[in-house]
Amino acid sequence: MTKAMARILVLVGTSAFALFTIPSCAAQKDLSASSRKDDSVYAELAKAPKKAVVRRNPLERDPDAVAAGANLFDQHCAECHGDMAEGGRKAPSLLADNVQQSTPGTLFWILTNGVVRRGMPVWSKLPEAQRWQIVSYLKSLGPKEKASQ
Amino acid sequence: MELRCTRVFLICLLALVLAGLALPLQAQESPYIVTYDHYLEEPGSLEVEYFSTFGTQRDGGNDFHAFWSEFEYGATAWWTTELYFDGQTTFNDSTIFTGFRWENRFRLLQQEHFINPVLYIEYEQTSGADKILKEVEGHDVESDYAIPNGVARKEHDHELESKLLLSRNFKGWNVAENTIATKNLTGGNPWEFGYAIGASRPLALKASAKRCSFCRENFIAGVEMYGGLGDRYSFGLPNTSHYLAPVAAWNLPSDWTLRLSAGWGLNNHSHRFLLRWGVSREFSGFGESIGRLLAGRKP
Image (cartoon, rainbow over all chains, first blue to last red; front, side, top):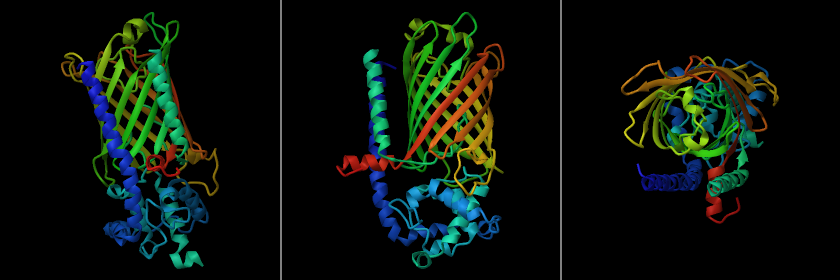
């Protein structure tokens, strides 16, 4: 490969990077803003398999689970879902009835698998116990009406 | 060369300034330095990393310190793109910039499965003096690194590197295997192969109720093994180098991750010892900040 070809490859690469990544960030914002109002984003919850839906939270009686989950939420989730899980520019509210009425198993399944094509990464890199701690925290928030009281 | 170093420095400085506009994010990084697991960067986040490798050298060569910077960006939840800048200091010789790499990782399946595949494609333009040992491939042996910088830098490599990354999390453990296939586009070199495998686990699986720096869940320990597999005409484990390295990472609540790895060569073709360390920081919302800057709004 000649130097000229290498330069062209680099130029094409950097252009592709700029074309795909930077506009995608701006677009992501707009898309997310609209998705907040769009209930279809919550339809992902219905995709959890039955086996996952019925799983119980093994830490539901753990007195520290909610506090630990709150820390984890703050570190990993708040940037997109908002500090109080009220929803952000990128991701929907987790205080919505659809989420709060979901079983712990469903929330655990979503956390584990993410919703990759909608921009939510998989969170299986957090150990299972930590994902359950986040679920404990989310369930402790209650629906929007309760949270706003 | 000086001009090129200045440009690289300015690019790094610009990236750091732009990264400063974004929010820091608590990282949960793996301890591997060579092996990849299947996790990608979060969309819109930028991870700025610096790594060093100190390597011993026999065969009359000088020990060396190779270093590289990485700028890893989550373009989408299924695509991470990354730019590397490499350099090295060979003791009693010189310090030189040795090239750059552009890496892309694509998640192939949307959900978690028993084994999770990720496709890795990288283009690298490096000189023969590159010593970062980010992977071992083909018949890479220790004596390749004994060549003086003045001679080695005259060799220019344009390589296309592909990897299939397979990884799984199970009961807190991560197990990952990478298969490497590399083609040097310069000249008629054959495809070369390599491997990396790793296993790691946090010291505690539950998070503490209070934020803390020294909590056990912030530490991840593991081991990785990597080496060459020969080339298209002589595939196999002999006549190449292999390393075994315990690894550890410390994910600090202050958004930094520190990594350490002590690698031992497993045969006479390998460096006896490779000490590696790295520091990284993740910035969330980086892409959004850039988007706003370009749109002329306040970041």
